[in-house]
Image (cartoon, rainbow, N blue to C red; front, side, top):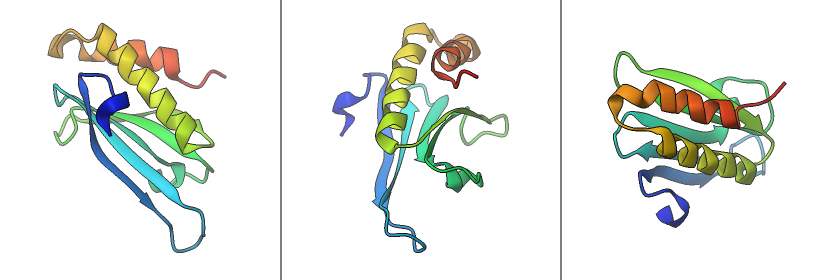
Length: 118
């Protein structure tokens, strides 16, 4: 399963499910950077309380700590597209990340290149 994930990343959780109110199969996947300082989530946008169809990519810095911060990177209609954007985000983050002191800079670098443009 981790064959498509950059070396510095692992798939933390991956599942497919069918919500009770629909026949459509949904997918959910999280990735964690080897530092443990960043988690990406590809999940139905509705899981975050949004009234939006499709999937959302979110990034959480310092997951599990009191200082954790979650930002929405992008919303798209399909899981496959959202997961491709997550792959791109992971590549960009890994290319810029140089240890804990650079987490915010690497996160901003990847975010700016994968975010929704309005």
